[in-house]
Picture (cartoon, rainbow, N blue to C red):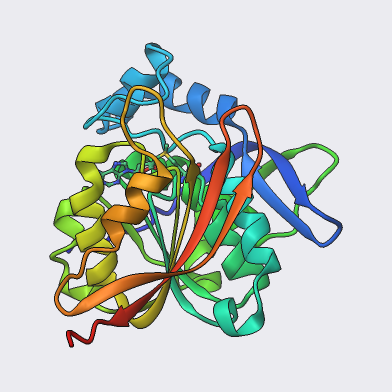
Length: 272
Ligand SMILES: C[S@@+](CC[C@H](N)C(=O)[O-])C[C@H]1O[C@@H](n2cnc3c(N)ncnc32)[C@H](O)[C@@H]1O
């Protein structure tokens, strides 16, 4: 069983918020708070890769720590994009956020769109130190003056039915419990490494139901790693088990390194 259980221990965290327009307010644990907590309690953390990334000040250590502690730019684009989507596409859906890290897009769907959301990250420690606290923060009344909040993980099971799935995409794409389970799959800043496209494509096909929607937010290209939205679009157009992904929408976000969001639908491919 790949799902992790939430440990019942109080957690004292430092928080900040991010707003999107006038309507959307998301809370998150600060990166420095997470890093100090992990570094201070190093011996308690089984995931030494996450500890190493903090000590070495690295955003990514391929195959060891895949960048989930910090909030990457495209995840904020994705929240804004989801907020602009119509009710039919994202209200009340069964969703998964792949490579969630802080999980803000998934948290938006749960908080504002009445969706049931599962969260997946390579590093279990990221789910425990960042994703789960952020979900709790967005489900509680917060003392915004102090910007400090005591989370009681005992409250957790009362307010949510999310699942948390640590581990590699390769393993997940064989997991029967998520097979064709989701109407909506969202992911941001996960297509940087060309070598992972095969695993990602298999996972997207495996997890999404027929006519399910896949939304990918990313930089248009990743220096040094080979990934890009154009290569990804080509890759994803492959037919797999009689299905393919059709592009229904795309939006560019201009920046030093431009970013893009692409919305695909998983459709049956009729070989004529
Ligand atoms: C750059 S971080 C992006 C985090 C978050 N989505 C954001 O945009 O802020 C990449 C994410 O992809 C996930 N990831 C990368 N490679 C993975 C793999 N092989 N298996 C599972 N997850 C992976 C990591 O867990 C990490 O959270």
